[in-house]
Amino acid sequence: MQIAYKTLYLKKLFPLRISRGVRDGQSNLYVSVTDGNYTGWGETSPGESEGAATPEAAQEALERFLATKPDLTSPFETYDAGLSSNIAPCALAALDIALWDLLAKKAGLPLYQLLGFSKPKQATSITIGIMGPNEAKERLPLILENMGLRTLKVKLGSTDGIEADKALYNEVLDYHKKYPISIRVDANGGWSLDDAKHMMQWLAARECGYVEQPLKEGQEYDLSQLYKNRPLPIFVDESCRFATDIPKWAHAVDGVNMKLMKCGGITGALRIIATAHAFKLKTMIGCMGESSISIAAAAAVSGILDHIDLDSHLNLDPDPCEGAPLVNEITMPLDIAGHGGAFKHNL
Image (spheres, rainbow, N blue to C red):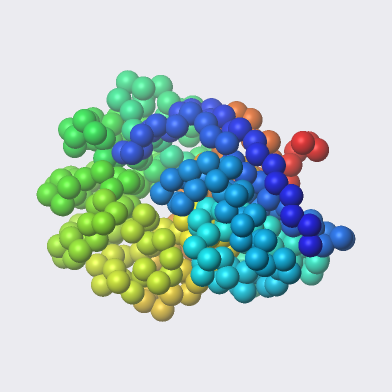
């Protein structure tokens, strides 16, 4: 098989601020796998927390790995070999996604059908980052009304403290009174245990559906205190990178959020889904600054999930790729062979 790489800079339409910082764009690595007849495409959105801070680091990791494994086998075997070789999960994700795309194209099936899933029925949420209430007042109509979406994920965990979080959330509530929307919160680990207890009680009285990653990664042993008498469901994100993390925290959470960049691709997501269901947990899928290629791959597994947050491609200016369209608020996989993601132009 032939492997090729390309790097593209993806500029964000709106900069995204979370508890750990702000981004207005990033360079992503695209990986192609060709068998002579078909080509599968994958994508990595690099991140230091995911093991490769730059596309160059992700490519170097893949090149080292593939030098020891010239004959790629099934996605499952390649994924396990990649984990054993300590490949950065975000780099492994690009290769894994490309292999699944190739496999589905060879089978002549949409990836979601090859995996045995139905099309999703849940609307995707769209994210609003940490910002002041005045900025939120201007931004909310742009990101919700212009795109026809009615499900909002609000990033909290401001470094300015929970009063700043409340000010932003209150602006969202004012918007909700005029244009009813579903609201959920992602703190990205920005709260202390005491602040998380207080904020969950406060949010529960204000239309919030659930809270994602209330505590910082590394503070998981405090989850049981937060879980007891919780007023809202708790989902973990950074605290659940792989399926093997789920048994450690299943007793103290209501659900898990998987991301292809975090778990190493489609194969890792399939294992998280199976393990979460075994523990009777809810499931969710999110994203990390990817274009439509990775989002299309994520959409292929979303038909079985409870919550969907596949919106990063909607905040690109422009998205160089296509294949993950919004259909009645749903990030919908296409009925073509493979995951459906492709470049708009021959770059």
